Every structure is written in structure tokens, then in C-alpha cells.
Length: 68
Image 1: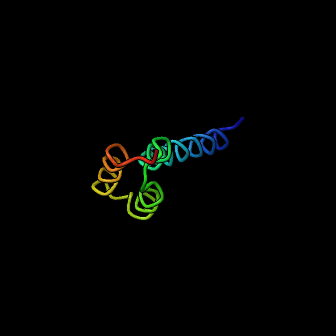
Image 2: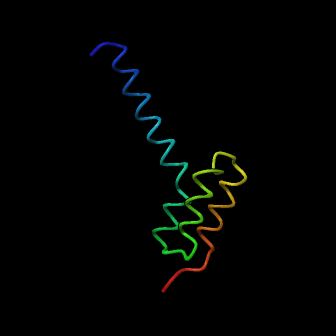
């Protein structure tokens, strides 16, 4: 394996990890069965790149009402 292939693999792994971290609020909302899970997902998808909105989505996912 040459250096270029190692760099490409590293970039792919880092991109996957960053994407996973970005969607933590949506993952939590779906795991908890939050009533607003799709809204949390959309807010996270379109506005989650700002840290403030990402933090709001995370709190909303953790504290929001769940379906029974």
C-alpha cells in the first residue's frame, strides 16, 4: 500500500466519524422514540453544522417527549 492509498483511507474514516458525530442528536432521538424525531433529524441535517443548533437538537433529543 502506498502513501496515497493510506491518505485516502484515512480521509474516508475521518469523514465517516465526523458524519456520525454530526448525527448524534438524530440517532438519540430515534433510539429514544422521540415524538419529534423526524423534525430533530431535519433540523440536524440542514442546520446542525452550526454548533448552537446542533447543541439545541441534542438537548431536544435527550429531553423531548417520547411516544409510548
